[in-house]
Image 1 (spheres, rainbow, N blue to C red):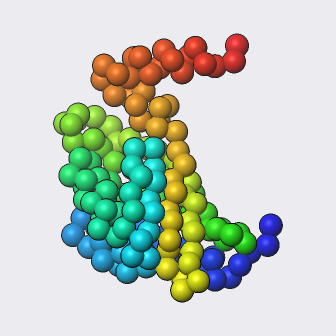
Image 2 (cartoon, one colour):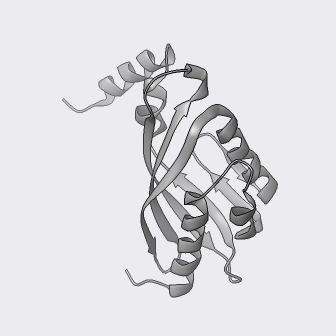
Length: 149
């Protein structure tokens, strides 16, 4: 796959802003986004900078020390890609070890170099829901039944 330098540069800038997110400083990330950016992950599908900011504000309200470690950045001919590790502790659980979620984001870049879409791909069942009290037991049971023997 060949790489479009414009897509790679915009994706790399987005990844840098993403990895340095802070609760009270989302402006750097939002400045790189198209006003009608679409953001999707396993729980959200929103359009617009303000709704994207709301997703991240919620993350800071529900997580202790959330942060993204960028593992790899690539640019294709139609989209860029970011592999990342999200580390955090859920506030609702009060205590316990840090959680880790591995994922990948598909990044679409407009003609003006602004990010028009950020589409997250990660396994919410095995990496998140299965670890929760109560619902986790049911999710683990379903995951076991779906495994190939």
